Image 1 (cartoon, rainbow, N blue to C red):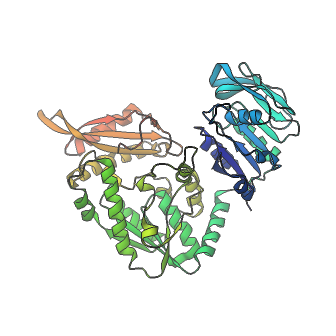
Image 2 (cartoon, one colour):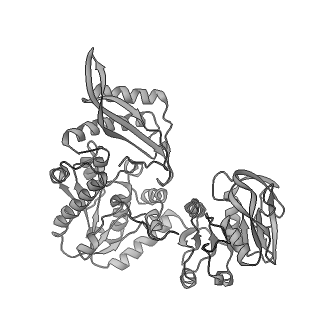
Image 3 (spheres, one colour):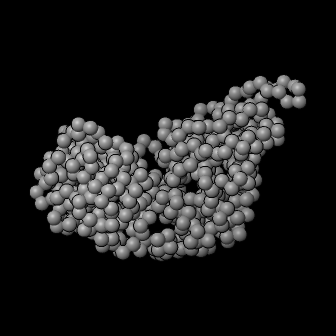
Length: 510
């Protein structure tokens, strides 16, 4: 059984970062809700438990808490921020509202570097984000670090099994935060650190091979990283019993359909190419509302997929590229998420077609998916490809979708991507694309007045797409992109650049 660190989520904006940092150290980590039953925690056989931060106060009537039996499991426990305050509160210490809140960088002074803070200098910079603090320690605990505003910035029990930090070691702003987590994982929890992309791929392939047996497997292949890695994992498990269906919705980027088909044929996949652009455009005629467009595209996709899948005898499984962030949304502190975006999966198909679902990537973050794809030999042009939404260009055309608008947007988008690749910054950007706006502006071309469309450039940097900052593309590159689009794409006479972050904006405009 693989080594596992469980992270119990109390609603912190940094919870996913905790899990990611642990995985970066080579140990599998899994996020569970704070209310996870003790029985399920025991079944997971974790090497240690981490209690995340959160926005609550421990003395609030509805404050999230844990089963006290967790302290009797005999495994190491680390509380971060709210997690530390909760440990102190539950074990008899005292937590108070701080007279001066601490948000941002702070300096701590270590007073014990024997184990948990081993190798951490006497003074180091960390990231704080709290309004409460531990004032009195529970019996059997000692302070191991202080800050100007927190006399107990870190603590441990004298048995060296339970630890707490008021600061956030998981964020990059804590200078030696990764070293602190490493100490907990390897020196306290005694993990070996054997979880890698290669070991994951080997184990999930074997698991699928056993579960699928001699059945046929269907996979909706979009050409993106998630579905591509999913297909390769299934291929390694069942070989010629995998049938990939590529539905060309007519809403793809310039030349993308042919590129996808050729790439995956070269990988030896049984790929069925369905050209259905006219069907989708007919359904989208006159539709302007973004959610209506998504729903129509999703429903029509299912119909097209069903038509092709019905021709394959013996299919009992459907593979799709659900990622770990999608799973986390459904077990968050606030309960099941209202809706996972329709482009994340082929919603409705397993039930409608009486298929069993295979989600080989459901334990992985996006960067881990790319690492697994690299292990399986996925070409770099696919591995490095920016994320692309399931509804395609339909949600990058604000308003009604027409063939003329699609051609215009494809041409502009191709120029944008071409120029950032030429500039060598494509891989530095998480996602880059154009949005065709439903407004026209006055321009001048060749001494003549024009009245044509505006296109917006959107480029963001991110780790996993859940938060994002706008990419600071140099002005000279933006100038070249703008000039090319206006000169080469008929019907566009103005280019603007989106400088919004997520949140509060989303990455896509619709």
